[in-house]
Length: 296
Image (cartoon, rainbow, N blue to C red; front, top):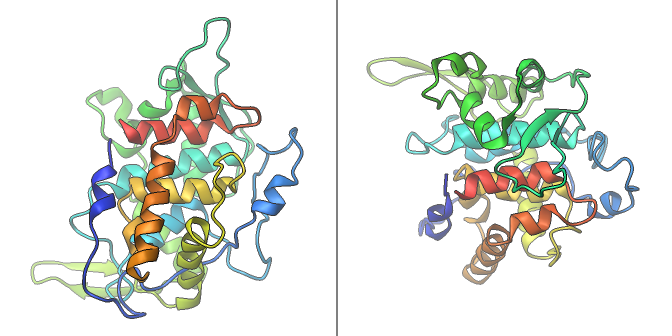
């Protein structure tokens, strides 16, 4: 699932604050807080309480969807066929950051991330319907499956009819409704000649502006040239936004020099040796396994 083609496209047209990608969103960069966590609890509820408690907190799935939504129209690009699997990758990483799943141990013979299975670490509910639905599927599956397989199953992109029951349906609509409940989006009905469609235009520009600025700062003014020291949620957001083909929306407002630098640093992250990064002390293996799944 190689998404590298999306890195070289840039719309020449300047976007205003109401255009796609001209806004931004929320959780502040918490790399300092993350670095202060001790080794025993970094995988437990990782960064769930990050940022200003008064700000709207979004999950990785909601952030990626918000990046992909057109601000005024309230729907994702009809040509984007990557965001579906990208959102499933977000779900697996979110479960990993919250300490619900982990990669199986390597044992005596060290195996690659692609061949290792995703296993249950805790079945405690997260309180998020989508996450809990995915967690239930993972819990009930024996023998365990790989990260690559779970992305395919949760997306419904499998030839095995027995695995279709694992598909998470209406994910974009359900995430959009979550954002409506949080006051970020609103709900409208639009007529497209032959059919009516429910859309979710942006209602809180401030939240999306924070989101875009957070991503821009992470690869520009607050760039950390060491992925192990980066805030894990920021790292996941950047890589999964690229996998979902929506990273362009965060960088489009930048001037030419900053745009090229931001894209260069995203490429540096995508060109990392994911196996080597996952093998480093205190690394979150789920992140790197998902990144590797999208690099194939």
